[in-house]
Image (tube, rainbow, N blue to C red; front, side, top):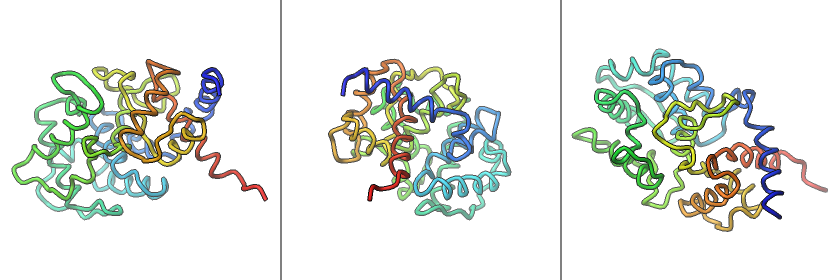
Length: 256
């Protein structure tokens, strides 16, 4: 398949799936409930971190969490007392939630935006910045919850960091479709990495964009590099196309 053919397929997928209608069935609908930047950041982070399992269950759990936050996540984080919140989504539990609330309070007491938690000396480079974020979450308190570390992926351990890359896409990408927020301006869209989930990986392999079989950081880097050849300034634009193509293939009736 030629580069032009790949480009045409993926651009067609973007037109079909990078649309306002996409929001209704995706966890990104959770931060879209808010207008204050800090509310969007906090709601987006939790919606992304809870994003494993079916999209219906993810949205249900994330919405329930926003109810626990009294629909004012930033105010809740900054003013919450030490009471334990009762919350569970798969293996994510109240211990994890309360630790992350503590981290967010610690961060927002010092910074206006969560963007700075992903910068290293004011710059963003995907692998080092995601590693730095992982470290900052657990250096923010005297007694961190070590069990919570598994919910904040680290590329140094080989993780594809799908959920954090998705959160970064939400916060950084901007176009006319209105799906992503484009709130953060110190991180270039060109430096984002693809959120590698099973649908994206399957589509990329079928299109010859990804050879690696494992779903890990090396696969994330390999696919992102291939997408940069098609759009150097916004490679993650094709996340929607690859995800949509994967869903379409899953829903297509099997031949008899």
